Image 1 (tube, rainbow, N blue to C red):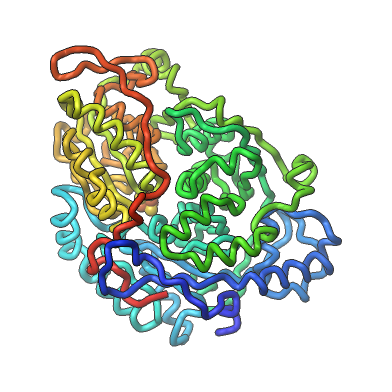
Image 2 (cartoon, helix red, strand yellow):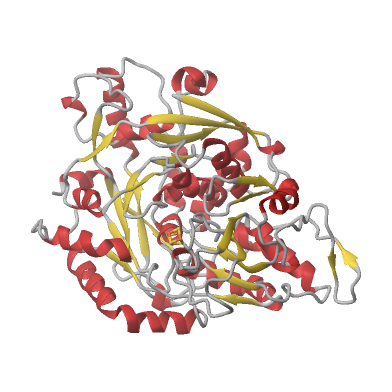
Length: 551
Ligand code: SF4
């Protein structure tokens, strides 16, 4: 059972200490064993790959083959099965229950690979963060106590309700470039923003990894997305994946790993790349991944994982596609898509499907033609998709422009914020971002999934009335958020959600339209400004939200 643990060294980088101090247990992310990964990869190149240039996804997969020596030929994408040795498992509270029960049957005393449980799906959004978390302990106590007891017994890190959303916590604490993780949630690929191959699976697959059984994956095709240029000021990484979903549809990525490359990659923040990978699930992709960049190194350092950044920097060759594959992508990727970041405009995807893309400039016309309700009844930001410091500081810059002119969110529009983690919430509070949101009428919810997964006790108005909501979340199938099949739900960047909250209109285009200040004078919002990372580091937040058990 311990054989597969060899993928990780015993060296540990203490994470999540941030600037806020505190004495609770720390999450610890091991420095990946790059020597082992490159040794396995080189063996595969010599024996079955005939020296062929590889994409990044192919490199990580071959570096995680359970037994390279047993392979008789190069895997055929879409046909062969790979037997893999994942480095880590993450589970959320809804899916962890069955997985843990299955793992208990293995008779093992500890999980074979570092594993974490995150309590995020069962907190209902209603009265605000603390009351909602307290109420979730009343409604789901037996689940939390079971998961906590099992976690303590089997050496699993346990993150309590209120500590944050699985994918944000993985990004902050556990993701590491070039490693392989299984997660029992479809948006596990979020960690691809930090160069990890992170794949959403069912509980039984996760148990394979936890019990040291080689995990089988049909060799995926690789869809290369070449990014060029840089985003315009009103655009954010969310607009990249909204546009790509519009081009490829909800099935366009099925059977593929989406791999980004090109000079545009270097212009993106690590958390922005995570947003793009997160929503790769919306095009059906197995996972998505970015090559190692300086912004990943900055994020690792900002989250107290400098040793991982140092090791990754020393293994940069392993952490990107081979130069020949980048030079001649049509030969090495199964499909190639080109995106000029500078040509993108903000997008709105929906309603009812994440691939129905409408560029911002066309929204007024399209909404009119489709008969979509223009009045926005709720605007929601945060979730695992868009909770980064960059996302929230940009949105706060728009909120400040409004409050300086005496403006709050439009009458009849609810504005809700779901922070992705306690670290993000505490940093947001320390740096005045939360106050900027509250000044225009926001309610800050628990660090949990809340309205994104339908845990939204929405009390205002008729629960079946037609209405429009705009969120920075990732999914928008009918009735997902509030159970109302007549709610039109649109996905957009946090910046566009803020603009919708202030104007109260789906058709409002902040690039061209004006708002009215408290005296009725027109003014235009200036493009959002935010910081990739907090200038004073991340605050660690409340000790009670540190994980039980470290690793
Ligand atoms: Fe899933 Fe939404 Fe929770 Fe993310 S925030 S893990 S998409 S339910």
